[in-house]
Length: 132
Image (cartoon, one colour):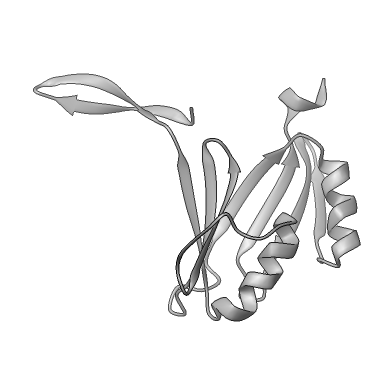
């Protein structure tokens, strides 16, 4: 479950549960972006809704899609919590994806990746998964 939001229901408020996060990243050139994202996620997409869109299901309740949309390209921001940030860092190095490491104060260490359009994906260690 991703979370709950109140919803109006005949004058009363009830909670509606979000069951899946479906997050999109617009790119200028899908043909150029797809191989990069396949390297980033370490596999081909799970679904191809049409010729210029690919979907990776990252967890049972979270999917990311990359879609050709030149007018919006480069404006995406996504933050993902991982169970092993060190392993992910090693894999990024292995497949040649550049990243910046950010850390400071009370915020956890983060790896920040930008695609060719400037969409920014930030990865951090999920504290619940780290045994801390």
